[in-house]
Image (cartoon, chains in turn cyan, red):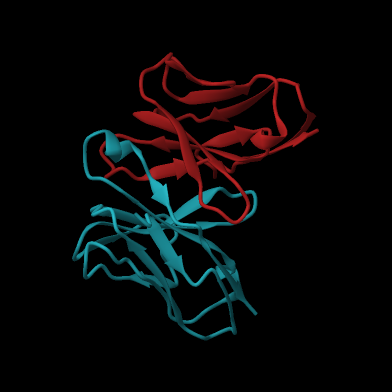
Length: 115
Length: 112
């Protein structure tokens, strides 16, 4: 199993450009999450999804959009990149219930720089 | 405002020393987790504590959940260079579809 796969690992954007961060999981997890990590700030939840076709906002959704057309994929889109979106982005997934409901599996992260 | 406050934020110690990292909140959590993150990687779950007063051990690491389920601590005995990394606590509040609230993290450096 690959677990949670994020692409790209690194990207530099110019202000105002758009891009999509890809996230795919092969564990058949219903719950998926996007976090951003800034130095000294821990992880902040951007968006999450409890299943295909269902998404909801987290703590810091402004400037981002998501979609969940399949169980496997949960892409994060930045429409008009701003320097404040410079961060490391992590995608994570978990099972819906049982013991696995307590275990978040994270991807390796995508480092985005907006200049 | 940080809902979960971790302290200290940075810790640099010599191999063999003991250390404790604290995770405090004014909110009650249904469970609390500790993660360890290495550079260039995502966080990896170390432990989940659920019951107030619960103590869990993972080799040289001891985790405790406060009696009121508002705080937690991570104690490392005889730290090794391999313990170096970023330690994150994360609290889960009941009834919020499993969303976790993360602390700011504690960066630990263990020098040989």
